Length: 125
Image (cartoon, rainbow, N blue to C red):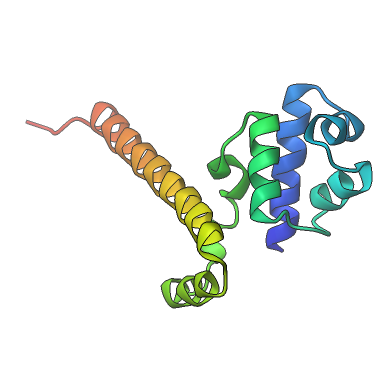
């Protein structure tokens, strides 16, 4: 399940900081139960909470979402468009900003990967 993968990533990011769930809850301003639910995949953070948790944990959306990005529906552009239309304009801007960030990060990673492949596998002459 996507929420479980995301929850495991949140737990990993928290443990990398050396924090308990209670410490993360205090730092983020959320309840211990909420953090526990997120880490167990019982709850998925709304955009504002997702951003807050990413900032507090000093991690990236790529790290948290990398296991679930492939689980998007085939016609995800239409689905995203429909979902965005249901949001107020200011929330649409927030979502698009996060998506833009994710896309830029993925392009950077892909470029790095391609560069490393050229180093690892130079053309044979």
